[in-house]
Length: 93
Image (cartoon, rainbow, N blue to C red; front, side):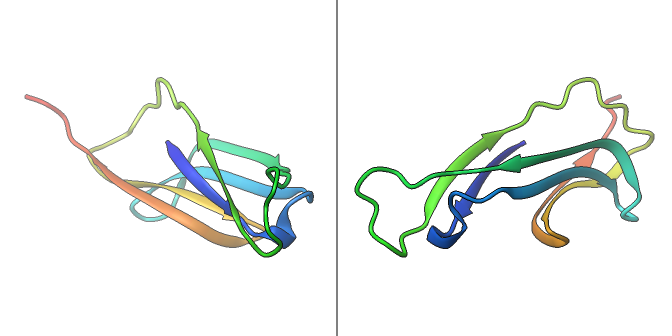
């Protein structure tokens, strides 16, 4: 999973909670669930009010999917959904 987080100027230098979880198409959690905190500073010569962008890559290995169908990664912060990354799982024959 690759995300690019937009950190507003006033959010920098503060702890920003982030939760990433895997859900099935009925929004039931499947695990894994990752909870963390991002704390970003201001790059040199940043003008006041300018947001910064921070890439975040998370590898998920060996996830068992119980059936074919739709799934999604949900990214939240402070109870607000920041992103939803949907995908489908199919078996090969």
